[in-house]
Image (cartoon, rainbow, N blue to C red; front, side):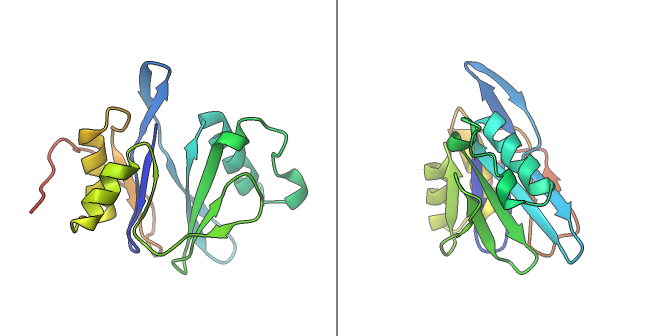
Length: 163
């Protein structure tokens, strides 16, 4: 499962992946470098669907190549943070939706994360809270800002300060 948080500055995501009752861990935030700028991309939903969307994104987002026929894409979405700070969501269509004003969350730990942000946590701290309090979230946290040079990682998510 996944928890993704955007607070207007940080885009943060956990690394837990579930397969039925088994868990594993994977990177879920990637940096793509283009001709003009870099973007950070993450996704939610079925891993097969996210992989299909990422493949489409990485190969240039050709409209005719959008994986409509992939049944898994119907159960997945992709979040793109560009260097201008715009956050876009692709969900079932090659046409992006501009994400609403922060804070915004996606995934199974979203309710915990949104509550944490409502109480003053940033997106990284909110993902930490979800990793501690939701059994389907966990692992390392990766995060970026619109002007980051690369994806950053936070390894120890067992201790959260709510001060």
